Length: 102
Image (cartoon, rainbow, N blue to C red; front, side, top):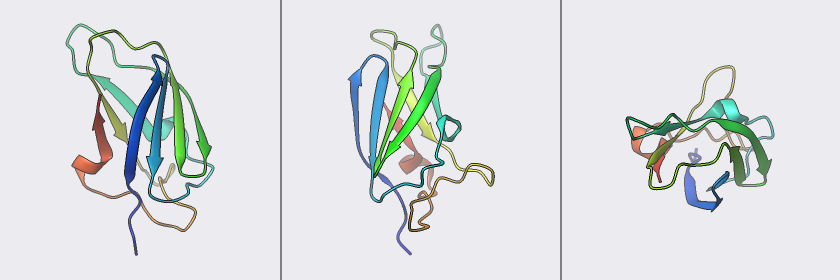
């Protein structure tokens, strides 16, 4: 079975992130499947306000990003909130592929 993986990432604005995956996603992926950690000791983690799914793309709405700060986007899967494709492909389970630095 193929594994679901992120293949593209971009930041359309200071309050929006888009991640494109290798397959179409289930509709019940939510903001609980993501966490955005600030990599600066003096800036809070970035709060995710919502997540929307359109085919292979997830768009995250966030509080405004702090200029010149670095963040780590983590993709999470649990038994309550599975991160899978519409074809049942699970999100790849290695730490490097589940995290995006920006």
